[in-house]
Amino acid sequence: MDVDAYAYAHRRSWDRLDQLARQRRLTGAEADELMLLYRRTSQQLARLQSHSPDPELIAGLGALLARARGRALGTQADAWREVGLFFTRRFPAAVYRAWPWWAAVAVLFLAVSGGIGTWVSGSAAARRALGIPADTDALTAPGGEFETYYSEHPHDAFAAQVWTNNAAVSAVALFTGLLLLPAAYVLVMNAVNVGISAGLMADAGRLDSFFGFILPHGMLELTAVFVAGGAGLKLGWTLVDPGRLSRAQALARQGRATATIALGLVVVLLVSGLIEGFVTPSGLPAPVRIAIGLVAEMGFLGYVFGAGRSVERDPTVTDGRTGDHGAENRLREA
Image 1 (cartoon, helix red, strand yellow):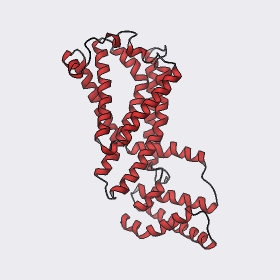
Image 2: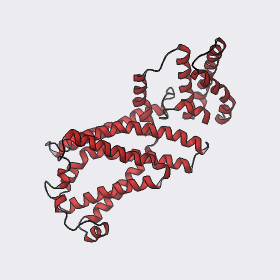
Image 3: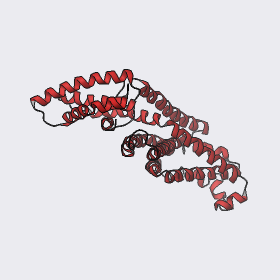
């Protein structure tokens, strides 16, 4: 089946069904037309599901049929159901579809951090090149600034501060991705800062303390930053290579998926902030604190690669497969 030709041939009737489904008042003739187009579009969707590998088109038709069915039955969308669909389908599907991008960001970020940390550790030349003071004992000594940073403020206020700061960093990485270079700069600078801290603590013989304070919250926090950066760069690359859509259409589609990721990451960063505010500075042994962070990290990855991949691969799921919260709008892009 030529999907593009099929979509072009039926786009006018799909647009008409969308118009009727959104219309506040329907005459008797329009109500009959709505039901006729609903049945016809249902048949077309069934045919596409058995012949077409295009998940965007299938998801868009599924969303349109859901809207038309609700209009025909006179029902309003259940807000809590929408929230449930967001977290069980749309958000994990959007993150899963972008995973090659954020996995690549993670590899490069860790490589830069590891390289900078190795260079800084024991190298006076590296410190001079990076403008680091020769005496860093105030930072690296036991009970120094690196450790007291996590405990000098009340836990709830610190968690809120961390959440706000991390959300801002992720937002910059997400939405400057359209320009590619600004997003890359933000990620590189964060990687350099992590590497410098690791190198200075390693030089002071306190690398165990570094990981004991960074890993509990850092695993989930950095993963959220990687996801934000990867999704932002994917959005920017869409401008370079829009595929078979026009640039405006491709950017609109990917922009909606990016916005879905941004909304979901607010919750992920909240969890990370709570761990950093209450677990990292706690008196728990370092292995226990790290284990708590590892559970949170594995939970998130399991959620994305479990729920996200399940939504993506299930041919019976149309609502939210692509992670595009405005999936029905893609009918005009098909």
